[in-house]
Image 1 (cartoon, one colour):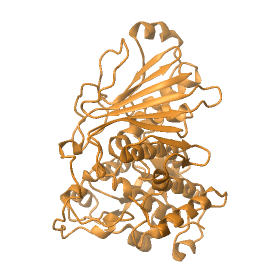
Image 2 (tube, rainbow, N blue to C red):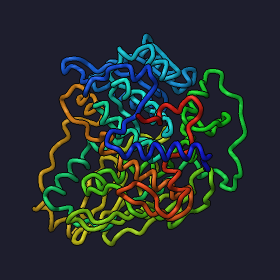
Image 3 (cartoon, rainbow, N blue to C red):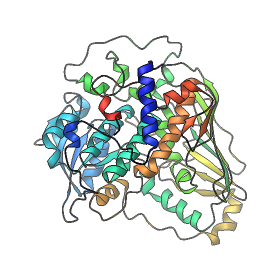
Image 4 (spheres, rainbow, N blue to C red):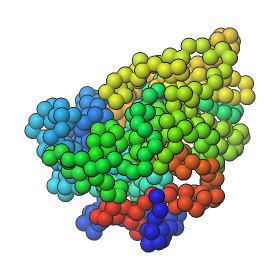
Length: 479
């Protein structure tokens, strides 16, 4: 977790540079030599030539959704393990499409044939892939959360602005009913004066079956002969291969993933964050951590985020709850805890019912709202008050496109992306700060203006992460 002095100076220098108006990402000479178009849109009459980076598990599901819109051609497949069973479906579906195991080699060979890319890969790998793609002038669809560290997200937002590309983070609810309902209710004054939000994801997670009393990473195991382990590791520091690092298990470890908060936070808190103009918190406090250890996420967590007043809007406290034994109290008149049938598969299967299903309660000075996850709509509780308000509720428009079509249509200039990095970035940074408080097990005070943690020098240093692995430093360099 500690950085050496040279790394510390490097990242502090970058942070200072980033605060300057002219600060933008800088890559290798080869990439910088290209003349990047400003907002390079695909012709409205053409399909988007799409390269898929990460084609197994969630990456494969994204690929199916994008392809099924009828708006794209699949022109390249890229995955670090092209011989694994979970990548075979996409290989069989697109048998004549060029294949790569290293996204950098794909761009070297095919950049001029690609309009846009997907990044359906582990959280820590989002950053280098999207930075490389944007530097080539390619539009990017990346799974949530945007990146693993606060500084990486900052760089991604700067690159989006510099290169003028279309970006979309994969929180699908931003193109479904909840997004349009929340906006309509907020614009009509139904949702106003929000003071508190309780968010919860209390289902079983992958690490819940592990023994938290560990003192080291798991031992090295034989590397599958088809896997490019060096490219899989990317910017993170060296690890020996172990099956508990890959195929979704990466989400469990601080070095690779963002835990329950990074996984589900964007599906539960996205509309609250955008339409309440929350920005970044000034305090993050892990008030409950069960079985905390320095390697993987706690068995249960409660994290309190404090946001200041914004104009006429009052301060907001958001409490996040995860873990099987960490069920928050619900307000009187809550009713039944439903599961939206439209929630996509999780780890290969549908989300399983819990004592309290994934969702949120939003408290205002006059009304209380109950909501679920993803595109689930809000309802006013208790039922008696909902009936009183029924005649005052505005008409909610239908979504003109799902999240995948919205991205591709934006590449064509026909729509605007609903979850671009400029919107998804601060939301992802909220999760980065929450995970940092989990990892260190301590309360953090954050200066929203300078974007620094003021009460913990180590935590402030960790906003930038550890120094990147040799050969991957270019993605963090600034002009």
